[in-house]
Each structure stands twice: as structure tokens, then as C-alpha cells.
Length: 279
Image 1 (cartoon, rainbow, N blue to C red):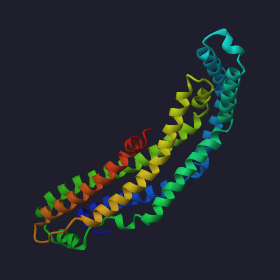
Image 2: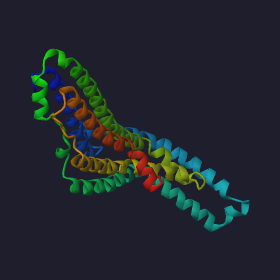
Image 3: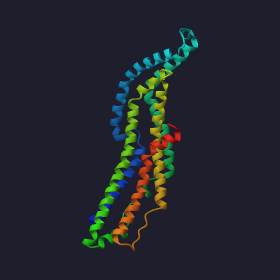
Image 4: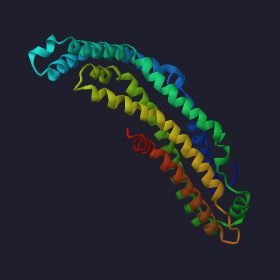
């Protein structure tokens, strides 16, 4: 880290950005059971177990609603195929509630395999790291106090913007994890809707939505891949013929634009998954 305050401020902002990129790369490969030492997962499992009793109660309610809604007359109740169809639906719904945790983990593991396959082709985010070029450091350190005033303003605004983008990026990825936990904790309630023919769309929507959240990890990895390729082909060019202020503003501005590309792709992961898979 440079002793110059202006350079040190930029280096600190770039360091924050690089740290968040590395943290994202690590988070994508973490399972819900391993996240934060597994303490959150233990609480989620307990909530899921507690809601299973409520799910079984809703199961009976949805089952009764399904029978009466699908029966055109009293004679339908006397038909064996009618009773068998609803009985099978009831058993499947009860199984989904009882083994809902295993179902959720199976979907997560399948989507995790897709993420791992994509990550194998990326390699890592080391090439996406940003830093202050040495030529820029030398130029900034060589200017006087009066010349450094506008440069100070440029670096403060740039560093603030970079820091904000860094936290937006990491909060989006953390938000995905929290949604995974919420889906898993409340799973018995929507899964109970499979007991009724008219209410089964609730369970189908739930499964689709949960699958979409799991697949967001693949989209985020692809976004990192696109970002890495993007900055490789359009890395900010440092023009040393310009003044220190103009040179710094140009470099920081182009760097921030590249960062906005990645933040936009990651923020749009949920929408992209919904559009691609019709979820």
C-alpha cells in the first residue's frame, strides 16, 4: 500500500473489490450445510421439522378440497378409479412433505453439479482483479499539493462508487443464499398443496422457483466468465500524456464501467433464469 493518501485510497477500494470477487467465487461452491459453519442450516432444519406438522394438517385440508372440487356428483365417490387417483395423490404429497428436505438437497446438488462444470472451464477470478498501475502511482506521487486537490476529489468519488458496487455485488450473492434457506425452511407448506388437484399449482410453482434460485449460481458464474473476458478485451488503457487528474479520471471511470457490467449481470441473474427456463 502506498504512503500517498490518494493512491492508498484507490488501492483500498480496489482491494475491497478484489476481496468481494474472491468471496463470491468461494460462496458459489459452498453448500447450505457448510455456510457460516452450519449454524444457520441447523436452525433451518429445525424450522422445517416444526412446520411438517402444519404441512400434514394442510395436506388433509387440500386433499378434502381436491376431492369435493373434482367430484361432479355423488356417484364419482363410488368409482374405484376416482378414489385410487386421489389416494395416490395423497400418498405422493405426504411423501413430498416427509422427504422434502431430501428433495430440496437433491435439486441443489444437481444445480451445483452444473455450477461446478461451468467453473471448471473458467479457472478462477485472479485475472479479473484490478489494481492501480505503477505509472499512475508515480504520476500521482510526483504532483504538488494544489494539483492534488482536484485529484483528491476524483479518487474519493471513484473509491466510494467502487466500494458501493462491491457491497451490492456481495449482497446479491448473499441474498441468494438467504432465499435458499427460506425456501427450505418453509418447504412443507407449499408441498402440502400437491394433495389437491386444484391446489397443486402452488407446489409446482414452489419447485420451479426453488430450482430457479439454485440455477442462479450457474448464471453468476457465467457472469464472472463474461466479465473476465470483457475486461481482457477492453482493459482500461493508461494515457500518460494526459494530466494526472484527467488520466486518473479516465482510468477510474473505465474501471468503474467494467465493474458495473459485472454487477448488472449478477443482479439480473434471477431475471435471466426466469426468462431462460420460464420459471
